[in-house]
Every structure is written in C-alpha cells, then in structure tokens.
Image 1 (cartoon, one colour):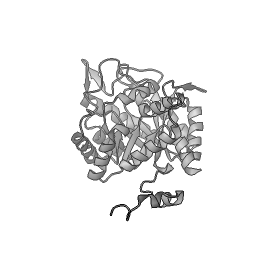
Image 2 (image 1 turned 90 degrees about the vertical axis):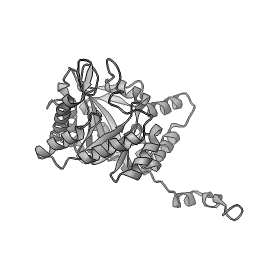
Image 3 (image 1 turned 30 degrees about the horizontal axis):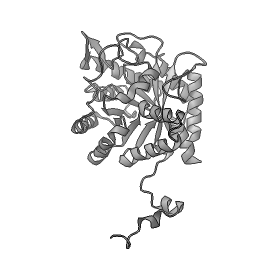
Length: 324
C-alpha cells in the first residue's frame, strides 16, 4: 500500500494514538541499579568519571536502596571495594567482606528490594585480573573454586541472585554445583555469558578500582568482532545452569541481544555500561544533549532489541519518570 492510500502520519497525529500503537514498552520493572560498596561509615565518595554516582558505605547504600525501591526499581546489583587486596582475592569470599555486609544491611532495612551480587575477583586481587594469576597467566581452572566460594558467601549473606562476570570457562557449573550442595538450589544465576572486551568499561574500572595492573583481559573477555561466539558462550552457560543470560555492553551489541533473543528461551539482561552512561552525562554537562531524553531513547533501543532486563546507572531517574 502506497501514498496517498497509506498515510503513516495518521497514527502519529496525537499522543494518545502514539501510546496506543507503541510496539516497545519500557517499564521500571525492567531496571536493575548498579551500586558500589566501600568500607567505613558515612562514606559517600564521588566517582569523578560517573557524575551522580558514588562509592558508598553501607549506611548510605541502605538509603540509596530505599530510594530506588520507592522509585519503583525492583533490584540492585552490588560491586565491592575491599579494604585490602591480595593474590588470592581473600576478601571476595570473606564472611565479613564488604559485599557480604552490604547484603545483610540492605536486606534487613529494605527487605523487598532484590539484591543481586557481581561475582568476580578483579576488584579483590592485587593484580586486578578476574582470575588467579600464575606465571603471568590468568589460570582458568584454578580460579573456579574461588569464584564458587565467593558466590556461596554472597548467597549465605542473603543475596537473592548471583551474577558471575569473570568469563572463566565452567564457572557457572561450579557455582551451581556448590550452591546446590549447600542447600541453596533456589538461588538463581544471572551469567555475564556474553561479555565483550570493551573500551566502554573505563569509568567502571575507576569506580570499582579494578583495572588490571598488567596486560589486558583479551584472553578471557570476548572479541568485539564476534557474534557466532556469543551463541556458543550463552549456550554453554545455559547448559551449566544459568537462569538469565547477560550481554555486556548493550549499545554496541544490540545486534547480539537481538540474535540471542531469537536463539535462546531464557530471559536476557543487558548492561548499559559506565562508558555509555558517562558519554551521555558529559554531553549534558557540555550542553550538547538533553540527557534525560537520550537516556530514555537509549534504554528503549535496548528493550526493542530484545532485552528483558537492563542494568543501568540511570535506573532511579528513569523509574521516577516512568512512574510519574
């Protein structure tokens, strides 16, 4: 059907028409807020590269969790900045570790918000890599036990879900096996199954103090040029027991989200990462863009590509806007 018989503008003529035929709907139910937990009391340390975000001690984390819950955000994901680091990431799985304490306090004060935890070793190792390093090499199999112990410690502290982000082969099976063994078979795993070696992670590494001290992460994070590999990685993690599959980053990998949505039948999460957030906020500071509108358009594009859940630093502001 061609013009003048078809006129697409007829159904764009007013806001109610546009609402009624909208194909993609973003909801506050889709959102997960990342937060950075640090030791101490009364600590609210600004993250210079991520305007509006902070490293927060547990007392402040509880307040932010309450604000997020009140705004309609159903879940948050915790990243920890420990008081000390070592080669074996011992503070990652310590009972009195920063994430473990943050979980307990948030669940005590804001019990209805879902607490997800990032499971990785990079922020806890003195070398900054996501696994154990031996002779300058990140050793896959030697890292699995520590990753599983970390996930277990989070679940025992009260986490509702664990999210391994390390990209070691076999870690989902190791975590699932240990959780089941310890009577925690009800705890779901959201796997960073498709995590690319991306330049968009820069601000996060400042926020989490997790930059590698030598080399890079190309031997375990995925090559940005690959898409078929994403299907293999996701399929492997599903077979190992993952409940949700994540794609990270989101914006440069919308095609990957779309492709996975066609290939798998599990929920898909996408991480709207720090660099994606910071670029927009920098544009706002310079007066070049309307950040609120750009963020909303960005999240709709991620949802349109097929994501069921979106991890975003804009979660609270977006939820307030959607629910106003």
